[in-house]
Image 1: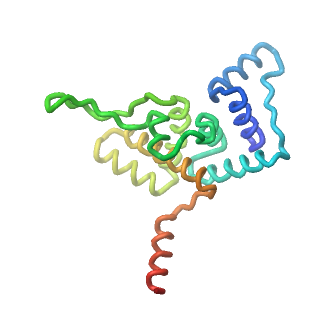
Image 2: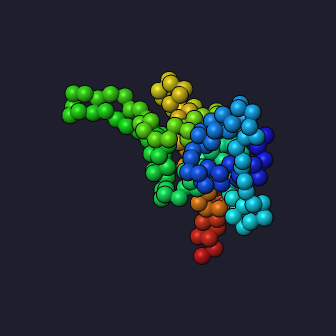
Image 3: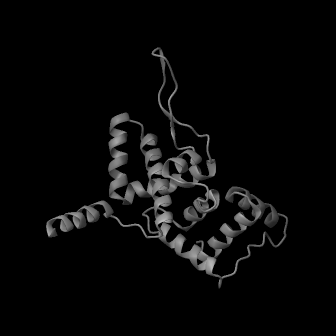
Amino acid sequence: MLSSSEAIGIVETCRKYGVSTGTFYSWKKKHESQGEAGLKVTYDTKSKEHKQAEEELKNICTIPGVGMLTAVIVIAETNGFELIRNKKQITSYAGLDIKEKQSGTSIRSKTRISKKGNRNLRKAMHLPSLSAVKYNKTHKELYLRLTAKSGVKMKGLIAVQRKLLELIYVVYKNKEGFIQNYEQQKRATLLEIETAL
């Protein structure tokens, strides 16, 4: 299992060299197979940035289905969501946005995901989506609704992948952990405020 210090070291190394996590792991395999000591992952455990990165990873890992490795891959591939301003951009960057082929009224094909984005992000989100469907009630409902409508299980899984990626982005930007019934709690507090007035 990947410890938080190792995870932060991987993220910092990827940022330092400007490479994706896929490239990092292929470099590491290459160096280890040649009998070398391997790629040096360096990080300062006492720095303020290290503690902040560790806290961000812990917040992301509170999402059901998302583990440390998934959090590291998402943060490293997006460079800490540095250039991403909204949820639509992150789904487009990952290639999970919908594209529709249409020409006038005669040609209309099925909608598909564009796949024009980062394949490492899409690959990293697959297994967490399976776990989220199993353990998270809202993701399970979304999955079941879409598979019942279309009959294709992969469509439901891709929708869950997209929701998970958006959720990771929101948790990272808000710097708070995942709250299971956030919408219900928010409505309840608003209702209490309205009744108090």
